[in-house]
Length: 76
Image 1 (cartoon, helix red, strand yellow):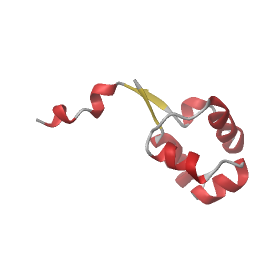
Image 2: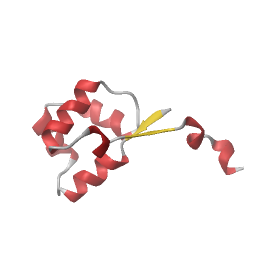
Image 3: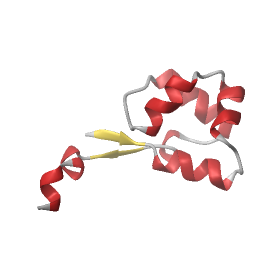
Image 4: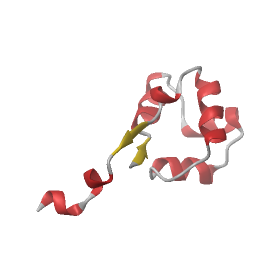
């Protein structure tokens, strides 16, 4: 299983907010934002800061998906 943060990027678009503004408001580093862009592991503290900034719940910014949906074998 992995976390997919596509909902986060859609929410930023809906709120007319850039990644830079998210960094400024949450105090997160650009490295953490890059990890989120790649659906890599981040701390729950990071997710909590984002939820507080966007006034939302974790389910509004992240979704748990199965690993096999990432597999290249699905395309062959």
